[in-house]
Structure formats: structure tokens, C-alpha cells
Image (cartoon, rainbow, N blue to C red; front, side, top):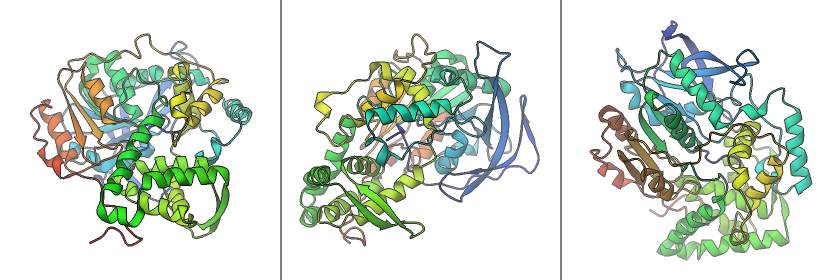
Length: 484
């Protein structure tokens, strides 16, 4: 799967912007509508433009106009410190992602503005997007085809793609802060955004009031190196819970064994299935092979709602009825399509992670195998590598108040990552949502806890007992849902 983190959370309404322009520092914000790719939904906010040099070492050269979004505080007098939202991926646009995660910021908006800027290589005007096949097909391409796809993509850009790394993007965040009048930021990062947030706090600690890290990425982690084993651990937990439940076991037996039986069968006998598009009902052909099973398992493990469907859909597919599995996979995948700017993602990963990536024998037999590592190394073989700060991979050692958040069943950034990062953050606390997947902010009482933390800067003093009601979604025993 291309993104490290692609959050599956509910969209929510946010306060409508003022009808007139608002000036914050040097930036003038005017009303705008932010759309969410893959849907017709829009969110009314305020927008401005931040101009930065493409190459910071050449301030007189090409410039980039980065789109800035502002969700205004609901209070008449906003607190001077703002919340800075950093999107994930790598490769997501903050202004395109915010509408789908806005619900998580609802309590923070009571007192504070939430501001965000498209990371260079994403958003309007300068996105580094490649016309690659979707992930269900990409890993099936030969090594030569994968290299050629990256080479063609690179040739399509009129840009210095080496200048799109995290290290360079962090300078844009500081430029944004200065343009806003140099307020202190309460920095929220989700998934890959936690890497950006930690690097920003390392480079510009005076600009940070607090950190909120959700779906935590340790700085020393090479993205993609543990995707296979992390997914495997999550699938064992999700599908093992079904096998341990009497009703689910009676309906589906051992879904973990079914997953591998299906994988092995379609590895030997891949097939093309015609299914109705879940939105338009037009007929579409989808290939069911080993790569498709791996991607479907990973997509469905991201959130408890989709994980609850896995035993039923795997059982149906193994019995010769894969249409529902493929239709649901298309629905999930299509909702993510267009969110990731793959060229920007390669600029980040090829510079920061590829030098430490290698296939592992112990991953080869697992559902995800070494496919992601292989594709990454092939594409990075022709991709320019940009600047990475000397201490980029060192743990962040900081006395900043920090709230870390993880889902118990996160298939990509498991709770042990949050525990690791917390070791060098003495004023931190790590919250884990039982039964939850990737990204916790919009779940249960987490929005209130996040707002209380930003108010008090006391993570240890938070009463997080309200999170105890969270749990995994009950499994679908048939197409009508769980048993009464």
C-alpha cells in the first residue's frame, strides 16, 4: 500500500468561515471550500497562500505557492497558540485530508484556530503525482516495469524533486509560523505526519508549545521495513478474535487459515472477476490474485469497521464467491485513490528510508511478503535523493508536553512505536485505544482528551478512563451484520 498511513475516519461539520477576509500576521485568509477527493463533499473554511523557495539554498530561484487552510476557533477571542495539523502518507495534501478528519479537531476548535499547509509536492499547483496503476496491479509488474514507471514519472515533472524531503518541508512549516506572526504551535501529526512533527520540534523547538502524535513513527524507523510483520500481527489478533468467539467460529471456522488458503489458491490460479461498481453499479473487472489478497487484507485491517467484515468476506471468497470481497475492496480503495502524490512520496522515502531497506527472508511467506520493499527499491533506483538532516534518525529528546496516541490493532504503526518514542519524552503520556486501528483522534472521547491536554499541558493528569468503553466492532456473521 502506498501510504503509510491512510486514516479511515468519519468526516464532520466544522464552523463556517467569516464572510470577510481575516488577516493573521502577513497572511490574508479568505473563505474557501475544501473538497475531499473521491467524494462530492466540501468543507467551508478559510484559505491563504504561502510562497517559499523550491530550493532553500537558492532563494532567488523557482518558488512554490503552498495552499494554507484555517479552521477558525469558535470562541470570540481565540487563544494565541494555534493547532498545526500535519497530514500523513507520505504524499497526502493537508487541505484535501482535513475535511475527512475534522471531527477529531472539534473540541480543539472551541478555543484555538487549526491551521495547516499543503506539504510541498502535494495540493494545488505543484503536486508530484504519477499516473501509476493502482496498488492491486503495481506489485505485479516486473522489476523492469516498476523502474520504468518511476523513470517516466520523473520525466513528467518540471521540478527539482530532490527538494521535497521532510527536512526541506519542515522549513516550510517554520516559514508558515513566521508568516502568521510567530505564534506557538500545538503540533498534531498523524502517521507519517508524526515524523514531520518530531523533526519540526527538533529543528524549531521554540515554535512548539506541545506535541500530539497519533499513529506514531519512530524517527529511526525505515518506512516499509516492518509493514509485513506489523500487518501479520494485526491479522492474527483480528482473525484470532473471531476464532475465539463461539458464534464467529461456528460461522467461519478459523479465518486466519482461510486467509492463507485463499492466498495460496489464487496464487496458483488467479482469476478475473466481474463485479458491480459499489457506487455506480457499472460492471468492472477486478483481478483476484496473491497481490490482491494481500492488499485487501491490509486495507481492511486499518479500521475496526472494515476489519469486522473480513471473516465473512474471506469465507465467501474461499467458497467461490469473491464478488463481495472485491466490491468492498474497491469501495475502500477508491476512497483513497488520488489522496497520495506518489512522486512526493518517492522523494521522501528514497532519500530517508530506501538506503536502509532490504528484503527479509522471514517476511517472504507472510501475506504482504516483501512486495512493498521490492517496489520501493526498484523505483528509488532512479529517483534523485535530496537533503536529510544529520540527526534525522535520532530519537527526539525533548521536554515538550507530548500526548501520544495509538490504536491497539494498528496494522502499520503499532503501539510499541509509541512506547519507543515516549522513552525520550519525559513529559509524555501514551494512550492506546482498545480494538482500534490506525489514527485515534476521532475515536470516542479522544477529541475531548486532546483539547484538555492542549489546555493544561499535563498529559499525566488526564482522566482517560472514558477510553475504556472503546473496543473492536462486532464481526459480521452475515450480510445483515453481527448477531443480536
